[in-house]
Amino acid sequence: MPSDGWRPDWDAPDGVLAWMSTRQGGVSAAPFDSLNLARSVAGSCDHPYAVAENRRRFSQGLGAPPVFLHQVHGTEVVELTRQHLVPDLPPPVADASVTLVPGVACTVFAADCLPVLFCTIDGRAVGAAHAGWRGLAAGVLEATVQRLGDVCGCAAKDVLAWLGPCIGPRQFEVGVDVWRALAAPDKPGGADPAFEPVTRRDGTPGWLADLPALARRRLAGLGVSRVYGGDWCTVSDPLRFFSFRRDGLTGRLAAGIALRDSDGP
Image (cartoon, rainbow, N blue to C red; front, side, top):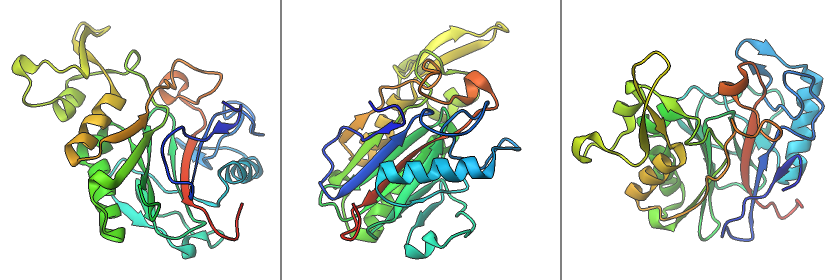
């Protein structure tokens, strides 16, 4: 893949543009080095000129202007229009977006949480969701697929999904709160292939959770069977990816998707 990002390998229609960033190819200084796309991270701010240049490079790679969100680990889905491209407009408070408008990119941040891109098989609509374990448990993927259906009349079986890089199943150690929120309730004795039992450092029971597998399960339950990606671990690859769990204060990756504008690239 290119150093600064790559186009997802999936069966999206030709009129769909998608891009996943890495941490390489930007201008931010440590600890945001170098292609950080978030203006503020955990109360600390990257240099605004660096973020602006990084966002310009991300937009160039994607081929459409991105609309970033103020993400809160919830299930709110916003429908984007050209109005959302107005400069200096406050970002929508949401964890997912959809659009029917060409040249407007649904975009989500991530730095261990799972970015998920969506498109319809006829190329009429696209969407993006930020799915950490809280959002996944609350139903952000279900809400996004539902909103896609609302805006374009498609069924879930006509939706494609791509899973970006996130914390991998060998790194995502969780406690009983996450297990209770996401483990399959119908598994005998609490067994669940998406959760591997481990003993935590403090001696309490824990699990290694497979976030992409959990997302695939939620999508399958909706009828979304064409799901791609989910093969990259942010924690295990410090050269390519930001990771909050690994580094604490760090930058943010982004995944974006748009319908090709006839006036664009």
